[in-house]
Image (cartoon, rainbow, N blue to C red; front, side, top):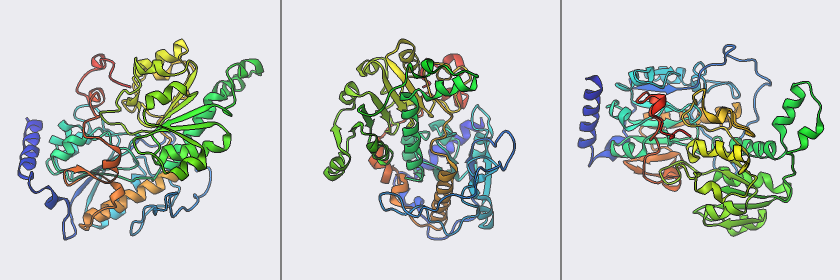
Length: 440
């Protein structure tokens, strides 16, 4: 009954606001007594804070495109601290409580009646991370009649039903560029790890062995290989720049072509169709956003486009790939290796086939949540909240949905549609036996 009443209230609010969404997006006077619900990943198993490997991180004021890093009025943490877990609280508690707001932090995000759902009834802002997403489905949005904004602490807001957010006048934002370089470094690491057969060779040593033949039987040089990225935005282009010194042949497919001077500088070949690119590549890396058009772009049909023995790296979103197709391709040799840090759902069930398939280099979703990246996205979330509380517009590049439509980075990267379908297992709406092969 409570769920029904909450959904009805949200629908009534949306109906009243059809002609006045813009009026509710920004307010002239500072807001007070609002509730912020942050869903963050669990603390380290050995307790918080951890023993840090080094003191501090390098200070970065600008991104490669010249835009400034997040610039809130202040921060209440030391750069390099672990901020993305529950006890880290994104460094927000003092700021929010000092300005009269309530902060709730939880890692309990999945299953009916989880703590996240219990707080939706009176939540004004929801913060989530791509690494540990709180799936904000239409049903959950309907449970949150006061919800004004969904903020992604990182990059990628596909865990939010963007169609429903637009319909109900909920702003969606993310901290664009905060961890793009972090992810690009991770991609290059994984490409080299697969091609050079690093992980199996490391396991030889850990197991007390020294068989060089076994270690090099699947080890190659990346020099001279055809390497392509699907999408050449901030992450994809950064990957290409970092691979350029390795003397491989670099390619990209994107609906937005790069400037001619960039293509010449890095000797890039442009493809307007990623499927044509895939046919010629030794290595393919996926760096495109997840939306209704890219969901399961790697499927039982398109996997046959790849060269036999190609490598595939995916640090974008797990649901770009059909889960079982990837596992089967590694079993039968269509792919020589698959690596990434993105799964679906997240966290994945213990029996997810990507945990046990051969020749993989999977990790938890860590590429964009290094301690360096956490400093930037925690500061970015605070900057966004400061603007919203003060009734000021946030940076255009942070906007995904604003005033009921795709905006800023959202208009550039996303298509209208819903990419949260299939998360029912995580949100507790179906059992594991009802997955129907959706999870990837």
